[in-house]
Image 1 (cartoon, rainbow, N blue to C red):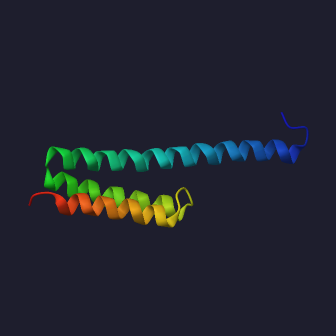
Image 2: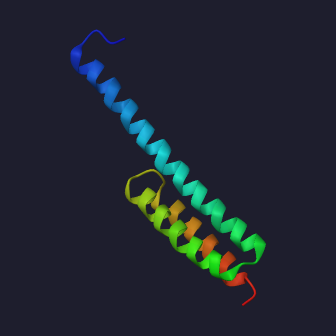
Length: 88
């Protein structure tokens, strides 16, 4: 444990931030997986709703600095390509 009060406080705030980031990253990955399963099942309607939530969470992760903006753009592009590749 840290000897200085400010260092001890910093450890606690870092742990809280890490937990928050881990939860946000997990939510993003979960939403992407839900979209992928909807695409794999061939359910267009479910895929479109899952696409919207996945893109929204990717944008939020990018805004919070969890992922780089170019990585977010790449992820959203690949999701769009998958959605557009589905049979209508």
